[in-house]
Length: 326
Ligand code: SIN
Image 1 (tube, rainbow, N blue to C red):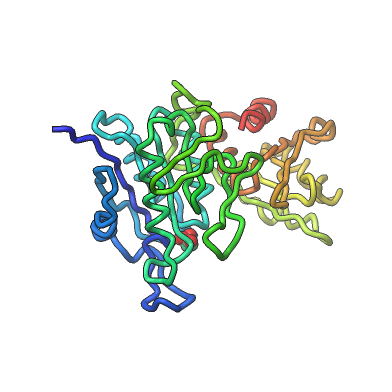
Image 2 (cartoon, rainbow, N blue to C red):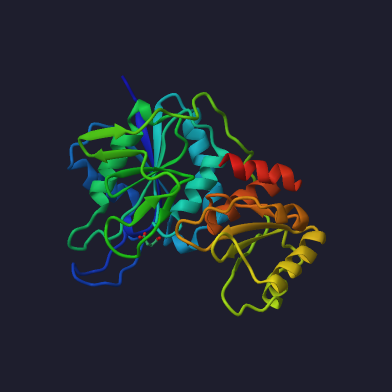
C-alpha cells in the first residue's frame, strides 16, 4: 500500500480560531484541534493523505522556544521519513515570518515545508483558512516546491521565508514579500512558480539549538534618549538589533552608546523600521563595528543573529557575510 502523506503540524492561530459568532471582531485563536480540522478538510476532497499532529494551541504572539523546539524536532523527523512527502505547519499570522525564517535557516530544503494561516477565524463570514489550507496542500504536495526553503502560503500567493512579511492587520491579502514579492501563485486547483528552486541539494545552513541567545530590538524614534539602549541590555544580552529610521539611521548619542556596547562584546545590527527597508553596509559601520541587516526587517534580523550566535559565529565580518547571503 502507498502510505505517502503530508504531515500537518498544528500550532494554533486564527486558522484554528473561533469567535462564537459569525460577526464578532474578537475571537480566540487555536480553538479547533487538528483532528477536527482535518475532518472538515476531508470534505473538500483534496488529493492528498493528511496526517495531523498537535504541537501547540496558541496565538502566535506567544510563539517561543517551548513550541519551536518540538516543532523543529517533528519536522526533522518527518523529513527523514521516506513516507512523508512534505510538511504543513498551521500557524498564527502575527509571527509566521519569524518561525518561517528560523526553520528555513535550520532545516534542509529537500522536501517542502509550508506554513499557512488565516486572517479570519473559522466561524467568521468569509473564513479564508480552508482555502489557504487547500492551497498549502497543493504547494506541499508539489515536487517543484522542494529546494525553495520554507514557504508561507497566504491569500493565493506563495512566499519564501526570507521575503515574507505580514503587512496588514485586516483583509485576507495581508502578506507580501520584500525585496522579492511572491514566488508563486496558487489556488486549490493550480500552481505556478516564478523561477526555479535555488536551494537544490542543500542541507541545513545552521545547526538547531534549543536555547537562543537574548537579542532585543531597539526601535529608534525622533527625540530618542541614548540611555534607552543601555537600559535594554542585561547580563544575558549577546546582540542588539537597531530598528533604525530610514536606512538604519540613529541619533549620534545613541550611535556612541552602541559603540560602547559593541566594545563590550554585544553584536549590533542596523536594520530599518520601514516596511521596505534595505540597509546596506556603510564605511561608518567598519569604524563602529556594526553589521548591516540588508533586506531583513528587525524581527527577522533578530532571528538570524540569534541563530548565528547560537552557532558560535561572533566575528562581525562573518556575521555580515551571513546577512549579505540572505
Ligand atoms: C496569531 O498570530 O495567532 C493571531 C493572528 C492570526 O493568526 O491571524
